[in-house]
Length: 205
Image (cartoon, rainbow, N blue to C red; front, side, top):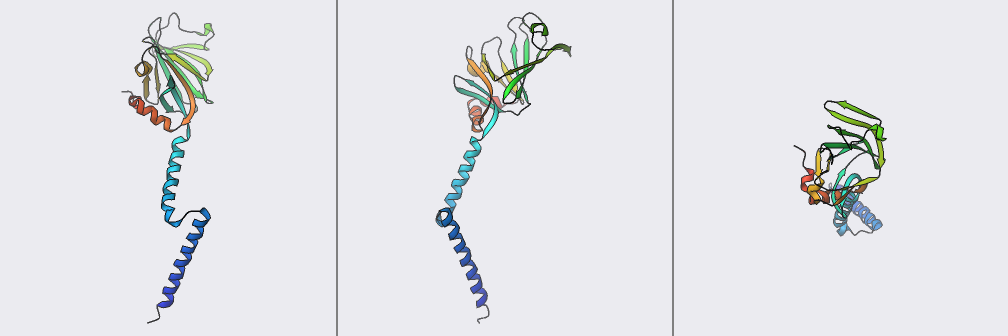
C-alpha cells in the first residue's frame, strides 16, 4: 500500500522546487507570476515595434513633406530616371547607382542625338557609344546627395527600380517639386508609401 508513496513524495518535491525557482525568477525580474503572459505579449509587441522602426536604406521620394514612396535599395544597386528631352522630344534615361548612402550618375541612354544632349566635349562623361540602336554616354560619375525634379508634362519624369515604376506627374500633378534621396528611414515608411500610392508596388507589364 505504501510502496508508491516515496515516488509521489519525490515528484511533489520536484514540482515544489520548480515553483520555487519560478518565483525567484519572477521576483528577480519584478514580474508577478500571474502577469507573465501579459509581460510576454508586451515584449513581443515591443520587438515588433522595433522591427517596424528599424532604419532601412531606401530610395525616398517626397513632395511638400509628404512621402511618395520609399523603396529598399542596397549599395551598388541602380535605379533609372527617364524623361522626355524638351528640345528633341525623345526619351533619355539616366542610370544612377546607390553609393555610400548617396548617388552617382553612371551613364545616360538615349536614341536620338541632337541639340541639348550632352557629350564628352561638354565635359560630361568620358565616351559616347552607339550600339543596338541607342547611344550611351558613359563615365559621367557625378556624385550627388540627392536632387529635385519639377514635374511638367514635358519632361514627364518616371522613376524605375526593381520592377516598379513611379510616374511623378501622375502622383503629384504638374508644377510640383519632388525630391529624391537615398536615406535610412524606418521600415514602416515603406508601408506609408504603399498605402498612399498602391500602384507604385505594381510590376511593369
